[in-house]
Length: 405
Image (tube, helix red, strand yellow):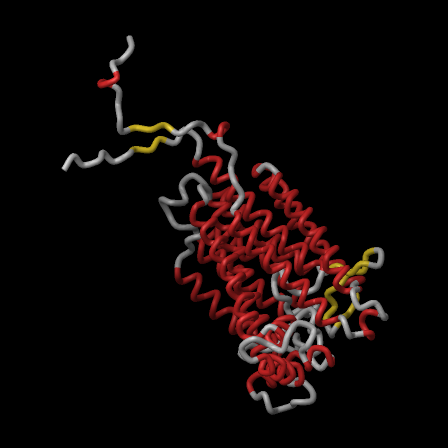
């Protein structure tokens, strides 16, 4: 029987199934990432263009390598975006296992750079497994809790056994990183683990215990001699910048001078006096933000912070919109990882954090850091696409009737 036009419901609209509407990428996230990659490439070029001791006479050597790293990272990220979410969860344990094996090999046959045994030389290419361990720990913890509690996690808190499992899973890579020792990565990993545990819904007493344990572990590490002398000196120089301006405090002192030279609009790209003279050590990696501060000024360096903030906002939005616990924890963990690492990197350039040697996500030169960062962006997009696809299936929306008055 056919209903008369006047008898048909007017206030119900059924969306077409998801097969008629392809899920869309988070373009705000993509634009922010693209902006960081472009700005980072220009800063790496400026920091190395006049450094013949690094480039061997080719002023674009580091720029070319940086662009190759970006290209490889983009391919890895696209592969993760295109991978079915079920395969992402299946491959998560393999990613974790590969990162642990890599960290173990570093202690056996790794190369020491800047006092830390953190690198593997593979066919003339240096790889830092600790960078991939950050992503591996995030997805490993997310998978562990999701497999145990998914389906009922909104009805109850994560149990003590779940928290212990997450800590044990993160503890093995953490110990291997501490043995290198790579203090900067250890700090970032600790903050990331704390963030994932907090997002999982663990009881507050666990968070208090983790914070207290971190402080106690740091004190114990110093007293036991786990940290090397130069790392302890960096902390002392942080507490007292004038203690050793030509030694442990040299990096921070030169970084402050460079950023102070920039003023509001900067001295101009390729025109920074400190940068082009090579006074700031590791300026294309750990201290890349000082190039922005000196040559692009407050405005340019502020744009970098704004772009990083946009990435964090989108990551947290993806986490909140995710319809499964794995996606929520993975996206939230990536947000904590990027946020703390960016704060640590920029903070040590400004003198408000100790020098620990961590790159600025998606900006600094470095293949391992770039690969891990873009793989994390790919995972965020994968979670976003899955959420967008599931929300479009059989969605029924009601429209509020218009008032007749």
